[in-house]
Image (cartoon, rainbow, N blue to C red):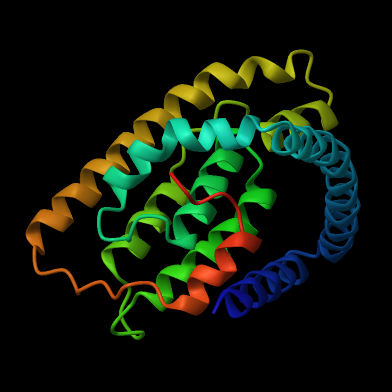
Length: 216
């Protein structure tokens, strides 16, 4: 669907440009936009490599583990229907930690793995469970302490103070996260008959050792 929308927008711009005799401007805008996209991508690579390197150091030094332990009560409250020590909780914690640091690209793989583990607890694979909806809401409106991607974009476009976005971003994401949690609690209360949770299978428990820390 998205591809068709983009195709329609491109075709419409070309048609309107041709009708107004401005095909040359449309062509120049297309190439300028492509050049800007490549420049922004290279700018993001440097800042992402820097923060992902710090993330690996924090993981190796045990900081991520301690952060996971601190966030464990919150996660258990947010996901009451996920069994304790299930591998999904470890991936959820890693996803939330990456989002706190503004590492959306690093958080996405952890979010996908968490969804895969939650799907194993889903008695009806065709319908998302409350836990899956909660994870999606939190991943979309997560509190961001350091908006790494936005800082990189502002640096790339010559901002004099690229880190000034930290305060507004923290406030905005705190409000959005609070709204997401409130909506999640409201919908959970409206649907008290949540699908029963199946206990983790032995195979799932065996994979826990290969994933992020999930024991808390």
